[in-house]
Length: 94
Image (cartoon, rainbow, N blue to C red):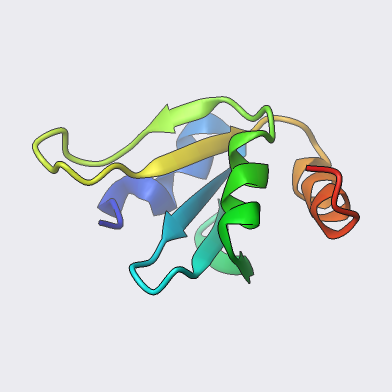
């Protein structure tokens, strides 16, 4: 479930926010929210999800706690965080 407040998070936190969604079809989608925009930045399999979990970015809690499905989001807390992640994922470092 996509939390409604994710688009406002970068403004509140002062950092970009990345999140991964593991679809029932097995596709993993990684999106990044910054400013007032959210864009899909990568799609892949479970390797993408594992790289996201091992990114070292701090976890964020979003969504309604009454909803049982988890929504994993992380704050990109370094200036070049997304570029570093993308280079590492492409090179297979994760």
